[in-house]
Figure 1 (cartoon, rainbow, N blue to C red):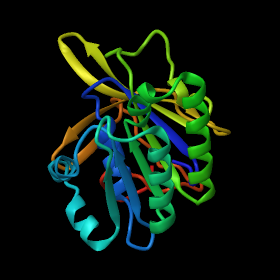
Figure 2 (cartoon, rainbow, N blue to C red; figure 1 turned 45 degrees about the vertical axis):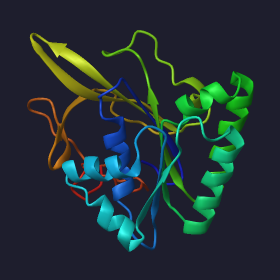
Figure 3 (tube, rainbow, N blue to C red; figure 1 turned 135 degrees about the horizontal axis):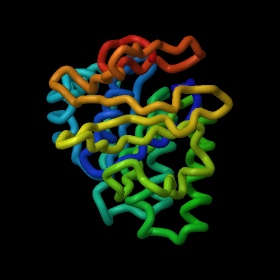
Length: 229
């Protein structure tokens, strides 16, 4: 993911959006920490989920390399969410920020015009602080959707990753497909992946290799390996 960019990770329930966010947040350090803003799952559950894919999120929190901020549904107004996010980012100097379910949580709190303006202002402010941002966004289609839409994020993100399912005979596979990388060429072909106790593992098509990029990017993987890709 290019440094100082915003990325939308789209996908249906169970596709691994939170897992991608956890991997991204886990590639942090005390001098360049991460913030994980959760609107679906409480901190304890996220720590257990991270442990199940080989991430010691609890240890990272103890060391100051990561922090989880939980927004309980229905307890915050939209402006409170924005002020809290900016305050936490300023205080921590976070370089990696994940919003897991922000759009869905804010949608009942504002109309489309208000919500769009809020998301643009929040995104611009956090990018100005030097952060790289990941937003997760749930879509209803299980398989590759006929209509692709990233909702309120479409005009403000630089990159879009679609997680979806693929049916090959009797087998259902998870697949990841890049839809957008702003101002860059990229491979449009989908790649299968598995979520394992060692993390999210990409599986290239038979006879193919996954090559790391050499752009000025935030190191993100092959996920869970500490490399770039």
